[in-house]
Amino acid sequence: RIMYASESVMEANEAMTKLDEVLSHTPLAEPAQPVQPSGSQVEFCDVTFTYPNATRPALEHVSFTVPQGSTVALVGPSGGGKSTAASLIPRFWDVDAGSVCIGGADVRSIGSAALMDQVAFVFQDTRLFKQSLLENIRAARPNATREQVLSAAHAAQCDDILAKLPDGLDTVIGTQGTYLSGGEQQRGAIARALAKNPDVLLCDEPTGALDYQTGKAILALLYDLCKKSRKTVVVVTHNGALAPTADVLIRMKSGKIESFEENPSPVPVQELEW
Picture 1: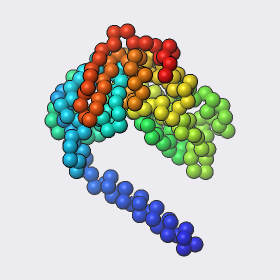
Picture 2 (picture 1 turned 180 degrees about the vertical axis):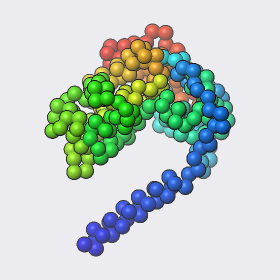
Picture 3 (picture 1 turned 120 degrees about the horizontal axis):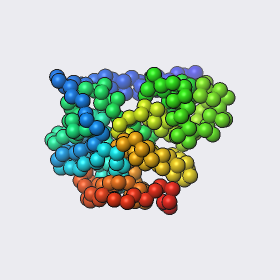
Picture 4 (picture 1 turned 90 degrees about the horizontal axis):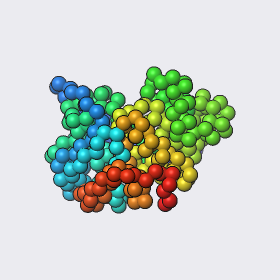
């Protein structure tokens, strides 16, 4: 009992420490006169950014433009600045110099609620909430109908997951519920992002936990979505083989852009081997 009690105390202390870290952060300032973006073009203008307490910039003089309705692949080694660049688009941090714009508007001039409506994310280490799969997918768009949630789940290749769950969409996930594998959770997170129907979709290694065929189907869906709906899709990946599928390829290293390439004839994901 003493052993289990001490373990619980350590877990509680760790949880409280993390909560204190979150609560101690000063919220980013809201704009005095918010503006609305016009479209989903993403633009970095001479951006430099350094994480708090870091000794060198994570991004240094980074500039690029991704036209509306295009897919951009940010490719490079770990620590190259890919994920940092993606995290600046929804304004998780404010830049030290330069500007990040969506639809011609600096993200610092867009109200936080409006900015979050504009952008959706698929992270590499996604976790689902202890709720039904329906509510997990609906989390990004609370007013989504059941039919819209089902459509997003189908698009995210979740049909086999729904078929095996005892209560389908209404199955509770997590503690005292049904556990899903890492790849299944990733597909649930992709369904959540698709249900939100954003103008800008950020994907950080979206297929990292998926098998080859499912990953290929998800990427094909994202790129098809980009073309049909005029959405801007930003994919962060280590997989250089995905480069031919993107409209814009940006190779990054040590916080700087090594190369910027526009691809006039992207290769369909279905035809790609990697």
